[in-house]
Image 1 (cartoon, rainbow, N blue to C red):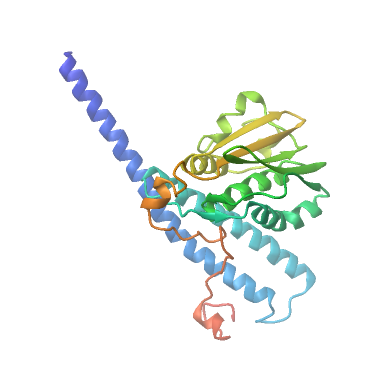
Image 2: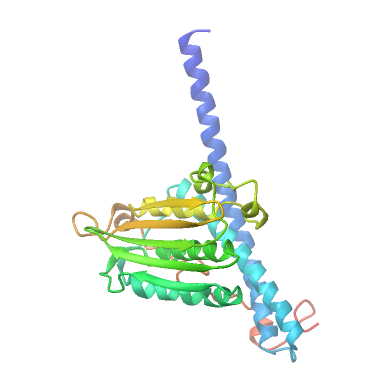
Length: 293
């Protein structure tokens, strides 16, 4: 085989691989959009039932509905991760940079997980600097990253405490989330940031997940010109450290934030999530296919 033929074959294989990746990203985006609407409607019905719109709800039913709502939110989070991944791979992921109060965002993230922390009997500590300068970044995406890190700490810490810290560096801000959980083997430290990768053995694998959250977070952190790293030992817990620049060199938004249009926060990220209520439900009416039957 000649060099020219080999080159042609390699170019053809590369083109086919690129086309396959493009089709995969397009499928993720399309399927995710199609799945999100019915899930929003399911959430709307669950909320209506919990509010007593169609009748009184006893304690046992309320707990069951709460579990159903949690499961739907987990599905929506997965769908959002798939959408983010597809947008990043297709270079359609835009950032909207603005001055962000990091301390306020840390408090909001804790408030979101406070009930889960209390339910597991964990203690929570906020350490480091409390007076932090404004951070020029994408608020919704930073919230997404912090929510993922603290959520993982809660999920993988059966007992003990979680510590969230922040400090000011010369031209950056550093945030870390430390837990006393099950920990991760050093051999898996880089692997957990890869798409659809999990620790295959031990307690981490048993707790489920598809291995997208940290992969998406790392890609977003890089788009924000930051860095994320892990220190962890099995049985002794983990520390995830996030470092973000306070601003770009010229004091303006980065290229991603300046050139792209502001991107709306996906449901559940960066804003209060509002489920879609069917018209009959909003009007307080029932239908043959609705909750009234």
